[in-house]
Image (cartoon, rainbow, N blue to C red; front, side):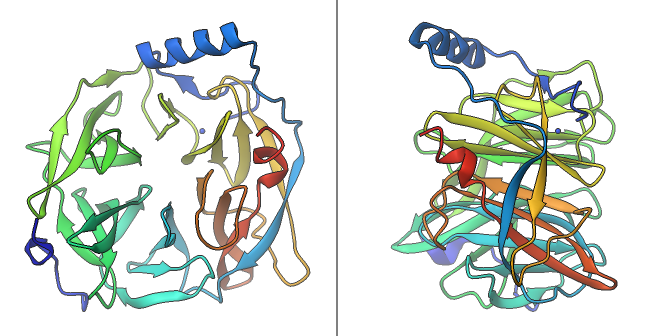
Length: 321
């Protein structure tokens, strides 16, 4: 596999508490629930109003945020897509990684890392303002985010996307829906194939509602008709979902059937946005000093000033492991 064969563009360029997430019943999810019942394990109950502390923050961002996403691995990355256009990467110290790219990205999904010829790269799926599905890459030799084609075959304009770790040799699981068919999640696996990205389609999943967001838990794909953002917070025995709806954060430990509102407590020097515009979460972060995983919210912290704020969920994630 040749790293140089990656087709890189130049760098200069879930719901209300009583409603919960809609579960897409799959054989995998049913199997998991059966195993939990047999072992006697129960999902922890999280009280409404549970507070998580804001522990770190970026410097002021370059404008309002449209979407954010996290990647894991030994070098975690936060990707920020701006409402007025532009894509920027940050490390787990909230410092900028390279230059801001001019790509007009409206939505991002979680990133995954891969090693290509001893070089580590991180790949984030994203949707352009024109509804095209692309991959945004960062790694050795790049001065900023680079855009790569993500071939998924002939399809209508993409409206939303979510991703998760893939088993075996896959780079990531990926699901998306379109503007003309927003009740069907098209599922598949993205692989690195001889230096290019390749898509292997799986079975589509049908819902009885228009999908607004989706997320992969450890073995289940879930979707919401209400939440703008949904993210998986998987760590050990904990398999939680974090959601953002109308500027309010929620967390669920039963695949979205019940949802508790989360409050974020300001730090001594860190101010969290009252009504976040975007959210991302990950249960295991190998870098940055977040042993219980991480939630990141982005939004206006004071008039005209926007930040991405790092929130520590370890009071829940570490208590259950």
